[in-house]
Each structure stands twice: as C-alpha cells, then as structure tokens.
Length: 348
Image (cartoon, rainbow, N blue to C red; front, side, top):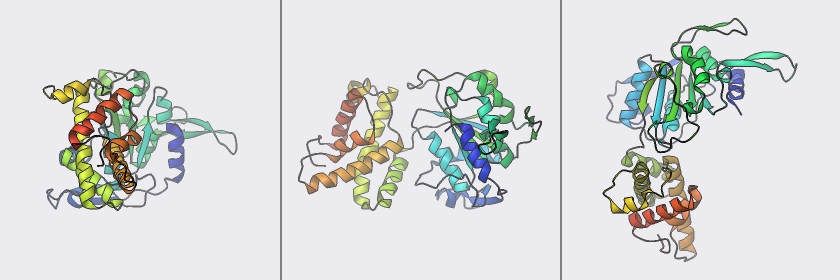
C-alpha cells in the first residue's frame, strides 16, 4: 500500500474537526519529576488516525526537545539516529498520548512528491478521475501530523517538491486551482539514519542544503538502559509474568543489547571481549527486538524446565526473536554467555 492509498482511507473518515485539549506532561508521559503545571496542547479524544497507545517509557531529555519543537510553532522536525534506535516509535507514541492523528508514510526510492501532495486517481465506482490529497496535504488541511519514515530513501528531486509545505506556506494545487493554507497545528516529521552511521547503506540519499535547511534536527539514541529495562519489565508484567522473573530476564537482555550496540558502533575498543566480536555485528538490536527476545526467553525457559531439558531459554529465544546472519548469531550467542554466566546447554 503506497502513501496515497493510506491517505485516501484517512480522508474518507476524517470528518471530525479537531478540538484542542491541554495535557499535563507529568501525567501524560509518566514523568514524575516534571513540574505539575507544565502543559502541552493536543486534541480531544475521538479523532480517526490517532496511533494506538502502547507500553512506552519516555526519555525526559528526548521529550523535552520534542515539546519545545511542538509548542514553539516549528513546522518540520528531522529525527536522526542509528537504525532501530526508536525514532518512529517515539513520534508514534507521542501522538498517541496527545490524541493527534498521524499519517505515517513508509518512504522508498519510488516515493514521489505527487504521492505525498496528491494526484488524480480513478474512482472505483464511476471510473472518472478524482483528486485525492496525499498525506502531506491531508495533514495541512486537518492541522494534524505526517511522519515520513526513512526520508533519505526518497530521491532529492522528489523531496524538494514538498519544501514550501514544510515551512507552512500556502500553495496552489495546479490540477484543481485549490489554494491550501496549512493550519497552525500542522507538523511534519521525518526519520533517517545518521549520515555517519555504519548502517547507512546503498540507496540512501544526501539531500541538498536548501532542503535540509527546512528542518529542525534531533538526534535519537537508544533509550537509557534503566528506561529500556523498565519498559521491557512493564511489557512482560502486562503479559502476566511475575515481576521478579521479568526483571531478571530484562536485565540480561538489555545488557546484551547494549554490548551489541557498542560493538556495532565500534565503541569500547579496550574491552577485549567486544573487540573480538565486533566485526561480526552487522546491525544493532532495537528495543522492540529486545522486548520480543525477553518474552521468548521467559517462555522457552518455562518449557525447558517443565521438560527437564538442559537448555537455555535466553540463547534459544533470540534465534526466533531476531533475524541475524550466521556470524552475528554466533557472536551474540557468545555475548549472552558472557553476560548471563552460563552457556546454551545450561538451564537458565
């Protein structure tokens, strides 16, 4: 499904005029050390296109940067970081808690400005061509948000087609003559891998200075280990796993994940264990993958114990939770043994 198809569905249901509602940061994002009076405007519940609220732990500094962008009236925010650092989920869950509709566009090398802005498409009932606004136009009309995921996959020439929109200027749709004036609550978000990332692979583009100048920038790193562990514990407990057991597995999984991430980045070169394994690591582990691994680890540990099998649920579970190359799988297997203190033939 391309960007235009997604927006056509949203346009068909988006008939409710957004009404502003103030949200307290402390309660909305579960940040007890934020001043009680601190508020940010969102929308009243009930609008279509609002992301579903999921278990998520917000980093205070990361949220501060996003709220400054939002309440400052800035239009476009680029989030950069390593793959799997949580750029998309951060934007998604911010909008979920603020009840702000978010048009999410998975960008690719074939994404065009026409798909983002709008185009004529045949009406399935009459066969006549009708103008269908794209996600960027839809967000401008509704005063909502659009997220352009993997923005640097888009050809620079096509990306330049939305430059005026990013600055909030009105523009005329040539095909219809309609003048679009973005509402003041319209926001544009984009994610991409950092230019110096080890995973900046073929197919990513460097956009020109004029295009880059339209965006505010925000660097997104992986969650602090304590926050990531708390998030995974919450997800496991929500699945009826005892708190103590959830904490045990979350601690090990997060420790291993951060060793993998440091090895991926070439950090901690004085650690002989990481130096020996670093060349085999070709990607980091996302929080999503770590959470999935922790759940599999708990499940397999229970099965192996019930069957009296001398096998480690931690080692076995990651094989199903994360797709890895054979060399990376062997390296991560060794990292699990180092952190957990037992190998794959030991009951965890």
